[in-house]
Length: 156
Length: 156
DNA sequence: CTGGTAGGTTGGAAAATCCAACCCTCTTCT
DNA sequence: AGAAGAGGGTTGGATTTTCCAACCTACCAG
Image (cartoon, each protein chain N blue to C red):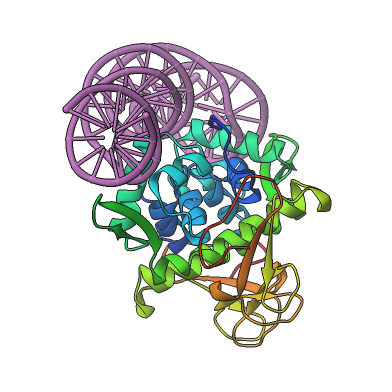
C-alpha cells in the first residue's frame, strides 16, 4: 500500500489503509458472525492461508481484532472483534444492503440480518443531530486542510 | 480478483468485488464531491494514471459511474456517480466516521460534512422498520444458503 | 511553431497474491 | 505403540497487479 504523492488527507483513505486490502473486511464479517477460527476463516472467505495470516496480524496490530485463547492444551486461538472492530459493522451493513439491492433479487439474498424489532434489517444512515435520513443533496463538504477544494454541487 | 474455492455467498463480498479494489472507493469519494475529471482524480487520490483508467472503466461497466461529455472540442469527459453510485455514499460516510473517531482527534479532521440541519454530520445506522440505532447485539444472522452456519452470539 | 492542458496508453521493474506442500503440536482411534 | 486427524500456521516459487516514467493524441493560446 504505497501512499502515492500527496493525496487529499481523508479519513476514508486512512480507514481503507487499515481495512481496505483484499479480504480484510470479509475477515471482519466472519469474526462479527462469531466464526473466528483460522480454518473457518479460510473456508468461509476462500482466502489463501498465508494471506489470511498477514491480514489477521495487521488487523490485530490495528486494534480491530484480538486473538483469544479458547483452549489451553492444545493451544487454540480464536479471533474476535474489539470495540473498534464492532464499530466497523455499519460499513459491512451498508455494503451488504447495497449488494442486496443492486446485485440480487429479493428472493436471492444469501443472508438476512434480523433486527431485534422482529423485521429483516434494512439499514438507513441518519444524522445523529436531527434524526433525518442523510441524502446526498443535504450534505456540504467542508475541507479543513488548505488547498483541497471541492467543486461540485456538494461544495463548501 | 480470483474468487477462490467455494466461499460463503454474500452481498458484502459481491459488492467488494466491484468497489473493493485499491482506489475504487476513493474514486467514488472524489466523484461524489464533484471532482470527476481525470487529472483531478489523479491529484486528489494519488493514484497512478493507468490504474485510475482501469478503475474508471470498471466502475462505469458496473453502472456506478457515468462518463459525461462536458466539452465538445476539445473532447473532455467527466465522471459522475449514477444513482447506484450515490447509494454507495453511506459506505463512505461510515468509513469516514470510523476514521474520524479512531484515527484522529476532534481538532484534526481533514474534512467535515455539514448536514442540512446545520450540524456536522455524525452518521448513525438505524433500522428502517423501527427507527432504532442498530447495535451488534440486536442482530441475528440468518444464512439462507444451506451449509453456511454462524456460530457466535449473533447466530440464528 | 512552441508550449500547455486534458485524457489517456505503453513497457518494464517492483510488489502482492496464489497455491501446494510442509511443519508442529496435540488428541483420538485401533 | 503407531497412524491418522485437526488446528494453526509457514515456506518457496509461479502468477498477477501495481507502480512509475515516458510517451501519445487532440486541441488551444501566444
